Image (tube, rainbow, N blue to C red; front, side, top):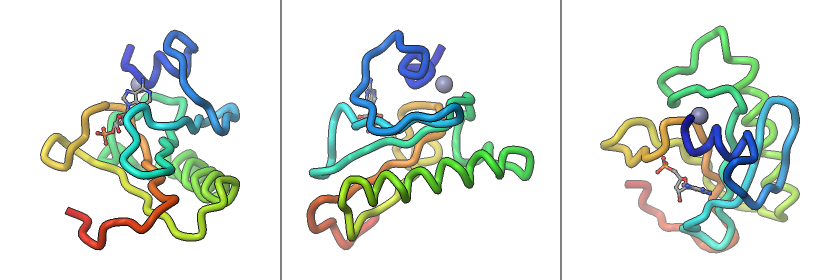
Length: 110
Ligand code: AMP
Ligand code: ZN
């Protein structure tokens, strides 16, 4: 089981900020901004490149939750990131969207 599936199963603790039957949002263990939250589908989808018409409704829900969580955190400005593949820095092979904010972010994205 991957590390995020273990978090979903409750085998690894996490600082949850939102949960429903389809997705989970929790604080990144190694925050790269004052606010750094990960939003993940509960279904094990390996990466952004696994998004298809078949799971598009689920992905839309996950992104809607990301927008709601950002609002709940009081973020007026923030960045949504999904690293896809090793050269993009993906280290956990379970689709996740980073919410980064709470401070002025770098103007560079790479
Ligand atoms: P990425 O490098 O884009 O695949 O993002 C994976 C993220 O997961 C990194 O920012 C890690 O800090 C974070 N992470 C890994 N393990 C945990 C964990 N147990 N709890 C919270 N965040 C984690
Ligand atoms: Zn997984």
